[in-house]
Length: 294
Image 1 (tube, rainbow, N blue to C red):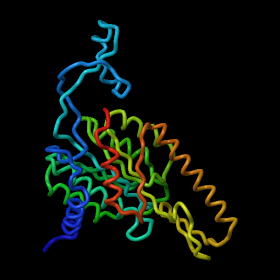
Image 2 (image 1 turned 180 degrees about the vertical axis):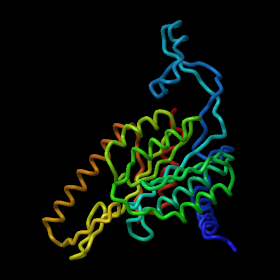
Image 3 (image 1 turned 30 degrees about the horizontal axis):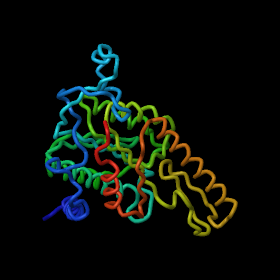
Image 4 (image 1 turned 30 degrees about the vertical axis):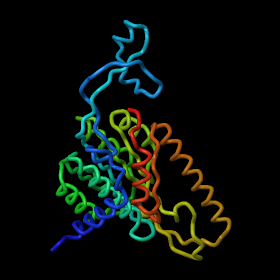
C-alpha cells in the first residue's frame, strides 16, 4: 500500500512537472546550481562580482582589481531548515506547517532530480532532528515522512529562532551549500545575526510563511484566542474598532521589525501565505533565482 508521504510526493511531483516544464536549465535539471571549486581563469572585476573572489595578488601586481573564475559544480548539497514550532500550526486550511512541508518537499524533489544531495533540519524548542543529506527519491520520502509525522508541542517559551539558525550553521559548516530557511519568524528577537552568519557562508533562501489572519484580523465577534507557543488564552471582541486598530498597528510594527532584521542579515526573503498557490510561489522563486551573480 502506498503511504501518505508517498501519495503526497507523487501528487507534488505531478504538479511540479506541469508547472516547471521548460524552466529547468539543461542538464543541470535545477535553477539552483552548486558552488564552483575549480579555478579556471581571471578577469577584470565588475560591480556585480562577489568581492570574496578578488585575487589580491594579481590585483596588487597590475594595480587593477581582478577576480578568479571557477568552473561550477553540477552537484551540490541543499539543506531544508524548517521551523516546526507550535505557531506554525496556525492558519487556514492545513495551516502554515502544511504549507511549509509541501514547499519543502517540492523544493527537495526538484533539487534531487539532478543527483544533488538534500538534507533537512526540523526544529522546535523541545526537539531538533537532523536528517543527513543524501541523494534520491527515498531521501525525499524520508523527509516527507518526518514532516507529516512530527507534531510540535506547546511550551512556555516563544521560538528560539537564533538557536535554529545556529544549529543550521553548525550542521552545514563542512561545505558551502544551498540553505532554504522556512519559518513564520515568530519568536525571540536577535535572529538576524545568526542569519547573517549563515548567509555569509552559504547561499541562503529565506521563505517566510504567514497566514492572512495574522496580517488582518477577521471580524468574528467574541472569540477565545490562544497563543500557539505558550498556550495562554484570552477572550477578545474582534469587532471592537479600537482593538482592531491596535492590532493593525502592532502588525505593522512587527512587519517593519522583520523587514529590518532581514535587511541587516543581508537576505531578500520570499513570502508565502497559506491561501496562496504554493506551486505558483515556487515558480516565482525559480524565476527570481535564475542565474544570480555569485
